[in-house]
Structure formats: C-alpha cells, structure tokens
Length: 370
Image (cartoon, rainbow, N blue to C red):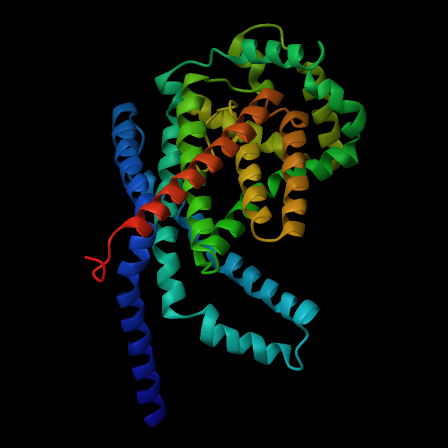
C-alpha cells in the first residue's frame, strides 16, 4: 500500500509540473502557434467553399500521428543509446540511459515543451492537405508546358531526366532512389519529433518550425496555386499534348516489372484521388515547387546547425531527393531549384526575424532599470 501511495503521489506531482509548464511552453512558440491557428481558420474556409471535409483539418493525419509517434520516440531513444555506447562509453551504458530517461529525457518540462508543437503540427498537416487538395478546384494546371520548356532551356536543350539517365538509368539504381525518396516522410517525421522535444537550442528549434510551416504555406500553397502544374508523369493527361516523357515512364514501367517501383503505385493513387475529387492522406497534385526538395533542404539546414557530419549526410540526402524527383517523373528540375532556393530564403528571413526579436527583448527595460 505504501508503494502504491508513493507511486500515486509521484504521478500527481508529475502531472502538476506538466500542467504548470505548458503555459511557458506555449509562450516560447507563440508566433508559430499564431500562424497555425490563422492558417487553420483559412483552411476551414477553403474546405467549406470547395466542399471538402472540414474535420479533415484535424483528423486527416491523426491515425498516422498516433501510429508514428511511438516509433519515432523509440528511434530517438535507441539513437541516444547508440551515442552513449559508441562515443561516450561509460562502464554501464544501460544504467546511464535509464538515468537520463528519468532525469532529462522524460520529464514534465520536456513533455510540456513538445506538446504545443506536436498538437499544432497535427492540425497544420491536416489543413495543408485539405488546401493542397483544393488547388485544382481553385485554379487550372496551366504551367506544365512552360516549365517543361524552361527545363530544356536551362539544361542545354535536353530534358533533365535525359541528362540523369546515363548515370541512374539502371533498374537497381532506380529502385534504390525510389526507396530513398519513399523514406522522406519518415525522416521528416523523425526530425520534427526530435526538434519538438529538443531543449538544446530554442532559437534553432523555433527557426526550424517557423521555416517549415511558412515554407509549406508560401511554397506549398501560395506558389503551388499561382504556378499550378501537375508534373512530368501527368504531362500528357493534363496538357492534352504529345507527351515528351513517354520514354521515361516506359523505362520506369519496365523497371517496375523486376523491382516494384513504389513511386508508380503512389502516382496512380494520387491520380485516382484527383479524378474522383476525394480527400485522402498524401493526395493533391502539385509539382511546382517541389516540397520534397524544399523540406529535404530544410532538414539539411537544421542538421548543419546541429552537427556538421549530420549536415553533410543530409545534404547528400537532399541531393538524392532532388535527383529522385526528376528521375521518378514527379517533378521538373526547376521545381526542385525553386523549392530549395525558396526554403533557403525563408530560413534566412526567419533567422533575421528572430535576431531582431532577441535584440528587442534585450533593449526592453526591466523592473530594475525603470
């Protein structure tokens, strides 16, 4: 009975400290949450106007969120354990990991630190998919012909996929690129969960999330609507013109017979939902700009500011995503260039904003100086 009472007292104290820490955590990310709330309201209005389910702004990613969250947290704990064993090498690595779990990794302050962002990103993800799915209901795909021509002009008269093909146009290589491209969502999930719980550098953390949501909004919604295009794989079906990508799609179909190229399954899934005008996870056709490349660039940026060697790896990863976006027929090369450059501009602008905010806070008179 004494042990039970002691356990209940500890649980009550943990919950009390958690609740007490949440207002502070909300204040730390107030600009981020304000943008998400405004965006959610706009998303609700768009969903209502085009006849998409309004509740999907909240529930759209909920099953995926609940399924992935334990997995991502487990990977992060295992990663910390590997770091202890491989680099710190204490006499009792498991004891150290368990001690860190109790004292620093699973504490009320850390959980409260993460909760506003976790819940905010859940709503943001659903809202983004609703807005993206509504693009063909708000405008028409009129830029594919122009972007295909610009691609050739920028690359000496050749389509970028033709330049890449001698380098990556072997079925095993295509399969490897396909799997790396498919890993993008999981890697994004891992890094944003890591940053949500991170207490190491609050400025970097806020810069990462502000850049991410502004990138999704400015690049993935606004620019995607103004420059609406479907991408190479849908070129013929959208434009009604002779398809210059038939050789690429024929090659991918041939590689699929041996290696099961998952991008082709995803492309059929996205097209079927587009034709049926249905809302589903990961749907919505939008090529310009490439958000796969944009977010991979952001992941590289945040990793460069954490550990240089991780930044190098993530730069290689982002380059592979860029290659895959063209080689698998999802994007014109110019989509990736726009996405990467746009992300770097937003990253820089957010950094300037946070610097000015910090300077303003330092100049603000305190009680002692008034």
